[in-house]
Image 1 (tube, rainbow, N blue to C red):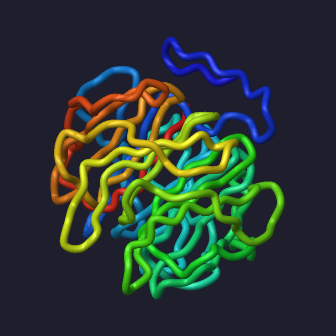
Image 2 (spheres, rainbow, N blue to C red):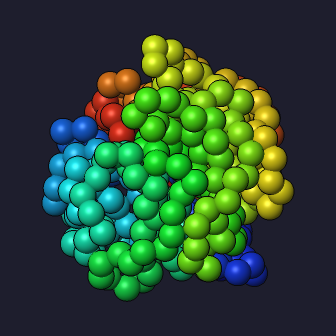
Length: 290
């Protein structure tokens, strides 16, 4: 059982629980610093340690280990979430690309898409270091999309194809390698970021040239269909990332800002202020655990 402040979660579903009370924001454009927060307690972030490689990232976890994909390389690094310190080499991605999206079921991690606009989905076993293997393909060639996952499904939404910002949402069954299937559509096509509890996925903010969005959408992960409006961020934001503790979602950085916003996943409404990151961060991969 994972305990996150007052939150007690029993991993009674397949794949277990892959989030917890400590949120991490790893690296970012031109940065190696890792920040951490306690998600149940609003306030400013503290220094956790450093990535061995600086740059934009996306991250996933199994509730205790964070795995971080460093964009523009094949490098994957990992951290023990409960213990502050620097990252360690995990292995390599199948090929070098930026703009990926990550999710997990607590056992298997998926790293999908990216530039130069590919449909590749890689998989890894979070508890075992090593290189990724092929999982399957997205329905389209996209990067900069948002991802979330329930106990069995991984969901990938929006992005950028090099010519358009699709509103397409794809899904896969994480325990069963294979190609993605159409889930439905976002309320607006855009680059975005995602997170989820066991039942509801949310996709917040983003960019679709020339517009930026404060939009938050939500889906029910077990039921295919189009996304529904959830509420709004405090401002129009792109290049930020989301994580959660099973109750509260936090959205940090973006647009060269250090602002962290929060909202309750199961209650629709607008985001409120949480606190600040240690510095302004773009594309700082977020995940959580204990």
